[in-house]
Image (tube, rainbow, N blue to C red; front, top):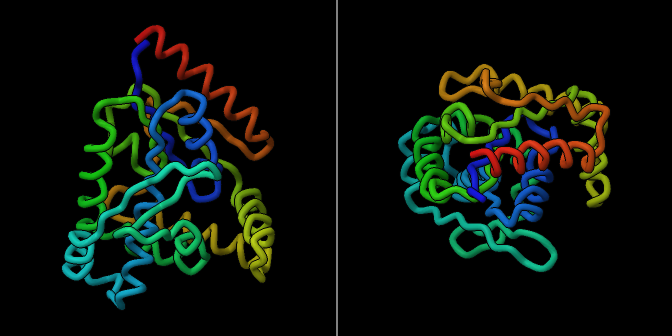
Length: 225
């Protein structure tokens, strides 16, 4: 069977990252967490005091970053220049900073180049906000995964609370809505649902239900491609 390029787009908190990892595991594909790449740039910018609105400085920063994914027994690790940033890039502050950093054309160009290099041979699952529209517009399978802002905010709230963070549900939902607005309104590669993407609303679905629907689609495409 042919190994495909699988693109998963959608807003923050829709379950893209979880499903991308599960799909990659079931299909024996490589999971390329593009969101983690942009989060890593935001983390590095904060660590080095780089202005998130300074495109020249961000471009220079990206040229110095080596982002890689390492599969461990207990899950994937995101590495930036050899440092494990898996937890550090998942804070609410980094989430909001990521929306600003990822709007920078120079940052997107640098990350897109890396993503295309990693995924061009196929057998990959990529999730983000512009995978099917910009990074791999000719991907064999495209999904657009969404859920209501309230549902996504609640999931994020529970995730952070389980990690011991002191968070407020209403504030978390507002942060999700703010991230949506930033992603959809940016001038460079905004979040959009492409005409050929399969839309899945996960608001009332379990992860297993969404996974099964995606697997059926991909496996049928593998056979017919």
